[in-house]
Amino acid sequence: KSKYAYMLKGMEKDWVTVPAQRRFASYNNLEGGTYTFLLKASNRDGIWSQEPTQITIIVTPPFWKTLWFAIALFLFVTLLTYLFIRYQMQRIILQKKQLEEKVQRRTQKIEDQKVILEQQATELIETNHQLENRQTQIEQQKEELETKNNEISKQRDELILLNERVNEINQLQL
Image (cartoon, rainbow, N blue to C red; front, side, top):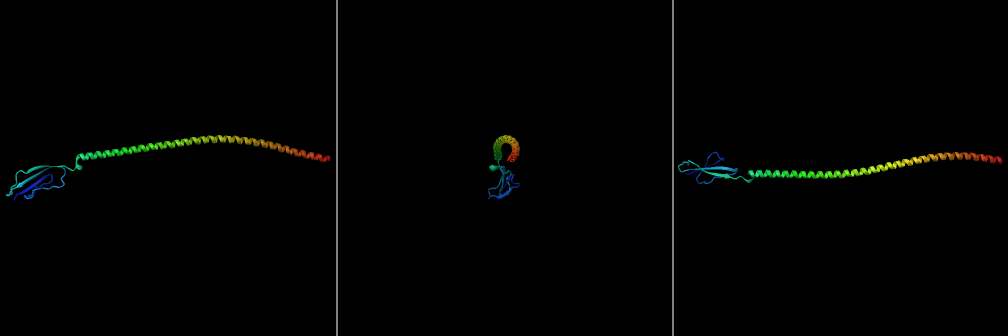
């Protein structure tokens, strides 16, 4: 009986012997690369051919296992990272600008309130001076009134005394 023997260099170490009726070889999950398929045959006497027949087989890897895909994926991820970082930077710059504007508005509001408070303080100081002047005037008027009141009291007392004397004199005359 005739037989075949085959080997795929890089996958198998030994020859695989099959009967002549089986005229195919099957390999699953081959990695991408170049393989050499060797085939030899034996005749009915069991004598094997001297030189095996060679077939070079090039297996193209799936696209996701190719170098160009890895490079493209790396570039894509790098681009996404760059865009994300740029977006975040723009967002941070915008937030910083908005925060600066907010701080500036609040600072201006505080400065405006400070000016108003300083004006009110100035007005209060002026009002206080006016009140102090009025108080001084009132105290002076009070002292004058007290002095005049004392004078009037003295004069009244004197008038009472005079009136009593006049009454006495009148009584004496009568």
